[in-house]
Length: 356
Image (cartoon, rainbow, N blue to C red):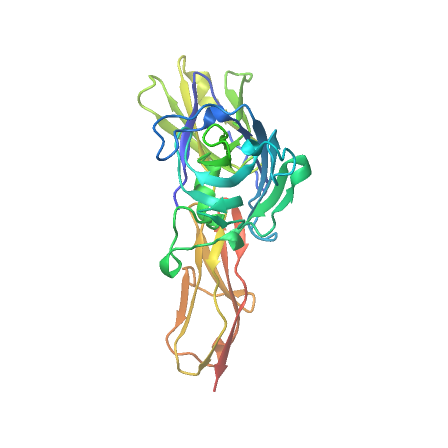
């Protein structure tokens, strides 16, 4: 899986590297208001801006070994009614639906999680951990892969369906998801908030001798590509700096020998590993073939190593492991260890029984 990247800084300074390895949670936020609402589908024009608002706080846990991937969230609404009892004589502020949707700033897109309300006349609250606090007008929940709800024929996805969190990670970490709130005062009652991570803080510092240190402060999983140029046209790669902690530093000693030197810094989102299909236990007869496999996703480069009874199997470094004709020695407990820039993830154990 490729990394999503964007240029975050071009400047005439620079920076040697300390690679830090951890699994921090990722903090994201969104501010709900009417000014962000894009022209709705089927509308002849953009809606009037809502005078209501709200906030969304999100915490993404990228460490799949600690209970699986999940995105916990709190949605606080201002001046809106979640259950119709706050202002019973004024239904215009009643919330009809809240969804996480896919789309960049100023664009609309399909649902990725139905949080609250009706979708096509059917109550859809696909987050099994959702709790609604109507009196205080806020909701809390946790989106994970168990919240997928596909309603198309033969289990296919429709634009109004909820999907797995792992299938939306690219867009979540690239700021391409937003929260949409619809009220009975449609379209004036719409609210929208783009889900954004905190931008990195880049601090350059000239060191003694003329070299330059660059400190990058960020709270998310990132890889930084640092390039240099003498003319802002021909860029040379200095390093790819993995930043899995809140602070990473790079020092460019070459800055001391050049009178003019420019730097371009791009950030790449490091997608953590996720196993969608685990290796399965099996019972076979001696002489029959053994085939084990795993399906995983995450940022490249990804390496694989199969184990039998906690001992690495020589040459077993692919997503598939097979034995053409098994013997009693092939019985045991198998697993695969997967590693990428975001860390290490082990599969579940698969017990292989070989009958004589």
